[in-house]
Length: 165
Image (cartoon, rainbow, N blue to C red; front, side, top):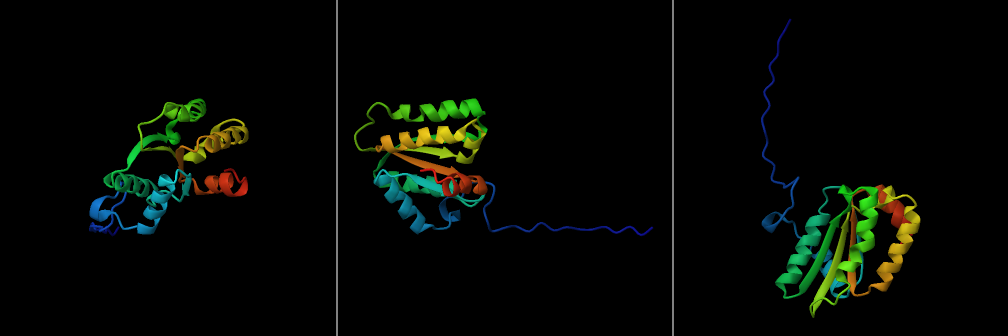
């Protein structure tokens, strides 16, 4: 029997992966940062969904850092919905705007960032729940909701096929 030994060489990659890119490793997405900055400053809502690992989180964090570096006060409530059970998910989202029920400090841009929003489909009768969320989003014009998801097909189903928001 012939025995063959294989030798593998590790190649150093110039790309950052499996962690948030920052500084020189963050490839400029100037147009997207300008768009998201404008949305936050105008107190509108943003919907961002792409496949995993495409830089959604980094884009948002870079935008928030840029705004803060330009002397804009950001009051942020960030919720990763992926790790919550359906009951926790519903309670967390129902109470999310209550965090900003009292007036925030003057000049503060209130932002609620809901990560992995596609997990909303785990809630029984999520259609009714999302309709309630739409009412909240329209009523709270003082808050910017940033909704992100990496479940591309689920997000597309919620926002393009069902046409929520």
